[in-house]
Length: 217
Image (cartoon, rainbow, N blue to C red; front, top):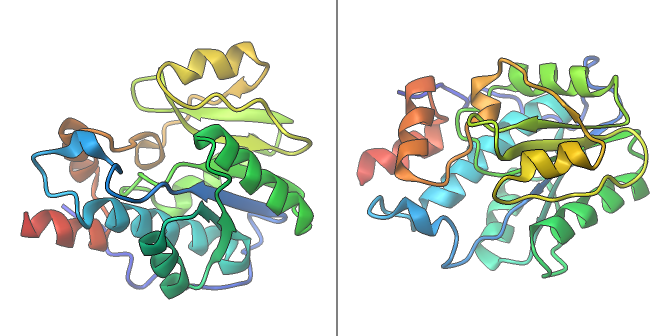
């Protein structure tokens, strides 16, 4: 099952519902990306999921406010094809990449910043917009993943929040003072790390690029 996002306008002007928001998307890329998705062919799947995620982000905040943090050549080519901004990954893990994205957004005049992982192929623009609207009420907030243990997105309206992505990150983010947003937004909350996660995303409806890759494998 897929949702048709080819018609999503790639605009540089953010809609009225998301004023001042930038979204930073760390993307590791490379041979180690999404290693737990075997035996599903992974060669193009991680990039396809990233592309579908980015298409949803661009529809909400525009190209100029979508920042991809990466140093992988293949991811850089994807980012170039989508016309969004590339920020160099400092190479010290996901939290450092997220911080680099936030700092780059502040430097570009952001008033609010979200760090969104790039493995949400079922994300709809309306879901992201709803999440940003909810997060705008808090200095620091996060949206947990579907299981409630991990983190799909972290947001800040001031300063640099303590990032702690990874296994059981939700409890760490909550303990650090981030407001937990248990929102009914399945496309945002389902991140894909395993074959079971991919099936859950497909049940919601993945973007066209992910659907095309999964259909070939």
